[in-house]
Length: 241
Image (cartoon, rainbow, N blue to C red; front, side, top):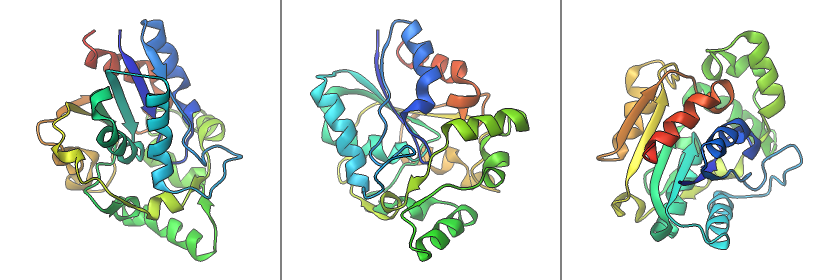
């Protein structure tokens, strides 16, 4: 059986993986889904991107985990890259679920489409340390596969203010792209990041992972909320099921 560490993306905490975790554990796998520092309704927003990677590294090393299938959703892709670089001997596969793949020295904000970046910049100008987009701003892009009612309920239950500082930090990954660890890039067929194909998750980010295994499946960006059984099954396949 496999050991999974599931890292959430922006505007979430570890609870977004609850249903996925349930299905994977039901298959006999070991699953950890930590909440990154500063996430959640009562999170301390005075965190940086380095705190994210350090938190997950501490989980893996402190728990003496080995042969880990390390999974990063969306923003979490930038986190798992740093974790893999720090403890490659403990990682079996790095999986990006519509994940951001940064080049060495990039900032997350550099890879946010301009339409979504503008509200973040406005929040920063107001002196805010965290931001939560309104439901109407994200419904069509993030929740297109479910009804308005279901999407609104998932947003209410699982969306959290995102600390802004980690989005502005430069992420240093001098070794990740040379590690040679197996990678996979999973993306839903209804998960559209930009208005043109070259801006979409695949191939925009997946092409930065030479030799990666790209897997497409029915689903949207919030797959762990809208169809957790689907993403659990896809992750289980990577472990040889």
